[in-house]
Length: 209
Image (spheres, rainbow, N blue to C red):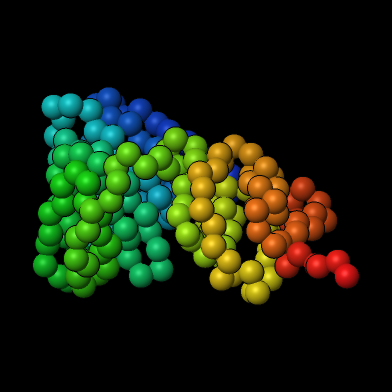
């Protein structure tokens, strides 16, 4: 809670840095900012950095290692094993704590842990994401989708394990997560049980005799 910038579930923030770069913080995230050393420390969750033109490199410190961004637009997300780095433009150097460094360019993505950088792969930079207030998925298991969705709504979101393997495809607006749940109920064999606004459970839809 002592982080310079922090968000809770369902909250996103953005901050314009002194050099004009735009820092965005996803839900349930935290970052420390050191203007003097041009460094950020990602403590939890995910950040997006869109660097202003003609500015010096910015370092992003993570538990897995250091990320050095040069005239870049990128996202960094922490997970249980390390961090995922996605680059929209510019170049980004990765320095794991105990492994070999690697460089990413626009349109490339990888994961880094303390000992290594995974093989690089490409992704669609035109695909909208949380920075635009949407959650886009294609053929994603419902369990993974709901785990991600729970970051964007306050309270408790639960579901029965039998629903995990159902598949979800679509683009959903994050400013109305109740509507997302209703859309899931309309397109999948699930039903939404609402105890309160902040306590929701998804169960398999019962088939009428």
